[in-house]
Structure formats: structure tokens, C-alpha cells
Amino acid sequence: MIRKVGVLGAGQMGSGIAQVLARYETEVLLYDIAQPQLDRALAGIAKNLDRQVQKGELAAEAVQQILKRIVATQKMDDLSGCDLAIEAVTEKESLKLEIFRQLDKVVKKDAILASNTSSIPITRIAAVTGRQDKVIGMHFMNPVPVMKLVEVIRGLATSDETFAATSSLVARLQKEMAVSADYPGFIVNRILIPMINEAAFALFEGIATVEDIDKAMKLGTNQPMGPLTLADFIGLDTCLAIMEVLYQGFKDPKYRPCPLLVKKVEAGYLGRKSGRGFYNYA
Ligand SMILES: NC(=O)c1ccc[n+]([C@@H]2O[C@H](COP(=O)([O-])OP(=O)(O)OC[C@H]3O[C@@H](n4cnc5c(N)ncnc54)[C@H](O)[C@@H]3O)[C@@H](O)[C@H]2O)c1
Image (cartoon, rainbow, N blue to C red; front, top):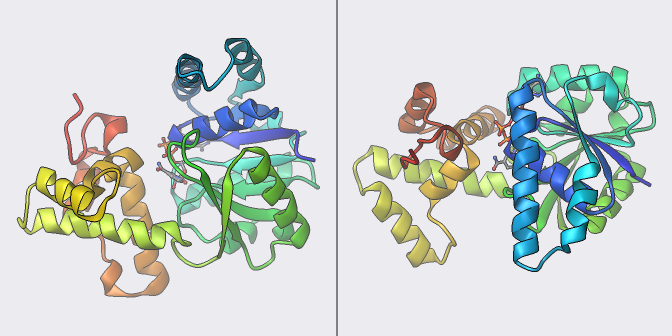
């Protein structure tokens, strides 16, 4: 039974994952290298829970108990006793591989190591550990407390036991699961991110304005928001990193990243989290 979970990375995703775990009776150790990120994550979680109370989705008495279950730390060693570690650091392969090498040494031998990666192969991540059978992909959607889906990705060596334990955790968190084999982009991003990239090309080529591209897709295809708004939510750096994984993984030019997307990331225009992306949030 998974009772204690380490979450690595206290950004948009890590903080959402920590919130949902704590809500469903799980002890959470939230780890990040940056103290300001940890502070921001805890404040954000408290604010989200208050909002849920106001909407009548959560009892006011539950808030303090949920918050008490989350302990922030800058020391990875604190994760040693966890039953599961979910990695949600920046989408950079070298960084994730290093984190998994360290995690494998730090976390108890029978624990499961999961990655929330949007696109990096689970099998490659597993290969840097001494427990390939216990490594799995748990791809939560953003914002985690709201979105129902967790894509579960089985690496080549992921065992049935690891898969079963992960599936029951997903059910405990009141989420739905879609299972994907370990190929670039899995299911959701294989389809979603090329659409966002194509929207960036439509802008880059002067076909339409940001607003009209979003309006066309929102009203024309009945999506809750347009692709450029969504890209700003996801983070343009994350979108670019996923396109590069698809491009490298399939060696197919149809996945080449749009130069405008590259340029925005170079400028530090990363979307909502940096105050500017396709839209300006300042
Ligand atoms: N944003 C999305 O919509 C989305 C959706 C699903 C999955 N993901 C995946 O989740 C992961 C995190 O994405 P995010 O949007 O939360 O990014 P983010 O930029 O909001 O957060 C990343 C966090 O990682 C931390 N970090 C960086 N290096 C670290 C290290 N060495 N040790 C510990 N922490 C470190 C940063 O301080 C930051 O808090 C990525 O793999 C991304 O692909 C993102």
C-alpha cells in the first residue's frame, strides 16, 4: 500500500500532485532545489484548498489536515522512507536521468520510482536505475487537482506488480487512467503538442492573429480553450521540449519545432509562469 510519497519538483505539476496526494490521505514530502518554489507551492496549495472550500467541494476542517500532510524539503535524503517517488522536475533529459540515479540510491529498495515526464522515454529513465521493474510513467494533466486523467506508461521492464500498485493509487486519487506503451509523446502529447506547434506555425506564417487562431479552434472545434492559450498554460519551454523529443524520437520532419516557439523560449517568454508567452499577462 502506498502511504508515503516523495514528489520531486515543486513547480506547476509537482505542487498539484502534492495537493491531490495529500487530499487523499497520503503523506507527502515535496522536494525542490529552490526554496522560493517550495514556498510558492505551499502557498498555492493553501489558496487552491480555500477555493475548494468556498465552492463547497471540501470541508473547511479538512484544509489544515491536508496541509499538515505535506512537508517541504530541499534534502533528497528525506525521501528515503517513501513507498513511491514521483519526479516532476523541469523537462530536461540529463536532469531527469541524474535525479533518477540519485533517487535509486536514496529511496528504499522496494519503492516505486515514477516520472511525470511529458515525453522522455520511461525505459531510458529506468535504465539508469538498478530497479527497472519498479520504474513507471505517471503523467498527470495540468491543472492536476482539476484534470481527471493520468496517463500511465509502462517501460519495457515495468513489472505487473508496479503497474498494479500504480493503478490502485490512481483510483484512490479519484482519477481515470489511460495506459500507453513507451513511445514518444505517449498518447496525449503525441496528438496535442503537434497541434500547438501547428498553431504557432499559423501565427509565424502570418495566417492569422493569436486571438483569431484561438477563437477559430475554440469555437470551430469545440475545445475549452484555443491552442495558444493552452500553450501559455503548459509553458512554452515544456511544449518545445516535447516537440524536440517527438522530432528526435521519430526522426520525422513533420515534428520540427516552429521557429517562433524556439524564439519565444530563447527570449524567456515561457507563458503564464513567466508573465508572457503568446499573450501578455503583466
Ligand atoms: N506544465 C504542464 O502542463 C505539464 C503537464 C504534464 C506533465 N508535465 C511535466 O511535469 C514536469 C514539470 O513541469 P512543470 O510544468 O511543473 O515545470 P515547472 O517549471 O513549473 O517546475 C519545475 C520545477 O523543477 C524544479 N527543479 C529544477 N531542477 C531541479 C533539481 N535538480 N532538483 C529538484 N527540483 C528541480 C524547479 O525548481 C521547479 O520548481 C515536466 O517533466 C513536464 O514535462 C508538465
